[in-house]
Amino acid sequence: MYGKTPGSAPPTYEEDQRNYTTESAALLSRKVIEALREGKSYEVELELNQKLSGPARWVSARGEAVRDASGKIIGLRGTAQDITDRKLAEIKRNVLETQLLQAQKMKAIGTLAGGIAHDFNNILCIIMANTAMLDAALDEGQKAKQYLHPIIKAGERASDLIKHLLAFGSPKDLKKTVVNFDSSIDNSLKLLRATIPSSVAINVRLGTGKAGILADETQIHQVVMNLVTNAWQAIPKGTGTIDIFTDVIETGSETTPTGETLPPERYARLQIHDNGHGIPKEMIGRVFEPFFTTKGVGEGTGLGLAVVHGVTLNHGGSIAVESEVGVGTTFKLLFPILSEATSSSEPHQKSASPTPAIKTGARLFVVDDEVDLLALIQECLSNLGYTIVVFNSPESALSVLRNMDERCDLLITDLSMPEMTGLQLIEEVRKLRPSLPAIMVTGNATPQTRLSTERLGVQLLPKPWRISSLNGAVQNGLKLS
Image 1 (cartoon, helix red, strand yellow):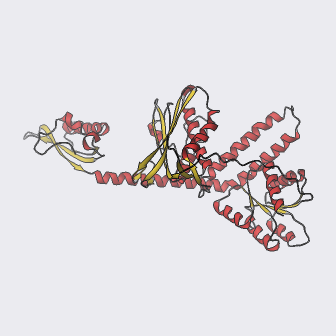
Image 2 (image 1 turned 90 degrees about the vertical axis):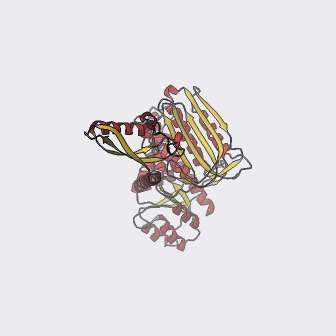
Image 3 (image 1 turned 135 degrees about the horizontal axis):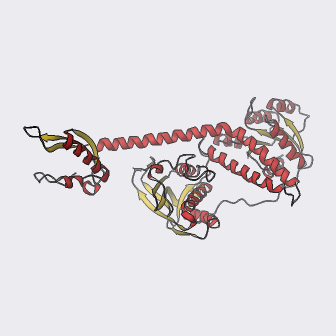
């Protein structure tokens, strides 16, 4: 451990100091001085200099002053016991404790988000839809229109925020396919280049070739856009360099800095480096915490890196960050390679199709326990030419539908209601009218909810919805009837 052979001369004090890391050497020096000045004994844990010992090793060093017959201190003696196994076990335990605390934080955020999502999205629906209708009702050039656009933009930001919060709360409902890693990164960068000022140089070197990963490509785009945007914002005065590299590496079974255990296999690695102001050492351990941010008030939500961390782990990968104040920051991400993709992947884009004509005389039943939201849906759909019948409770709607003479072409129902859920209502309605099309409206669509709606053949409309998306769902439903 110390590079000495049996029988060789003991090291001088200066030589002994070089056996340890800088921090451990300073600690030992303080203890030795106390022992020689005051006659105190000491016991400290020291990390050896890896240049001498190879892999990290630790010792427990004990020492005491040596006195002559008159009691005068004339030297120092002690022992060093190898405690590497115990220290490694402590480090592993600390990693697991950190991982557990992080998981508990994520769960707490998810519980909070799930609890407020329903009411929050109802409020957003009312704000955004009424604002859109008011905007449409005003003539171009009217001064009032300029006050509406910030409201619409703020509503969209609030909608994105609640989606990020919900991402922590439940198992991720990912639509994974095999995507070409380099193409996915390149497509993301094409979208970003227009938003990054020309004063920031972006150097890209993509080196994974045809490597394919099993991924939700939309979320991979989100990861890249979050990290590159953060890198740009970290560059002082907007003038600097962002380096983006990909390559393929093979790892053995290992534990990452953030506590994940990676099985031995091939990984596609993404590295994003900026020469910005860097992250202080004391903050590095917190950068992936929800709501933690080093930005000023109003400049960020503190969710970007938490989302990146969650997406990476949900794809079986890992993420690490290295940073030095005044030098810059590097994020390193690993994603397991599934196969060699034979063709480049393109961002998922749904082709626009002509909006079908409104079905003449369509009669819609709308069920929601939120009175204001019910009135809003009624007004929106009535303005589009539908006949609307509203119900403030599932039981009242079910009672009317039991009357076989009451015509209904489409049922629109909220998911979360006091008497019964929207799913339960649809199941009861289908007993009476098996072919009746239905739309389920919800602000918190869990994977279980999606499975249930697919089983029932029901459309899912997320909150907060736009008038166009509400009308589109209605038109799709009416085509089925």
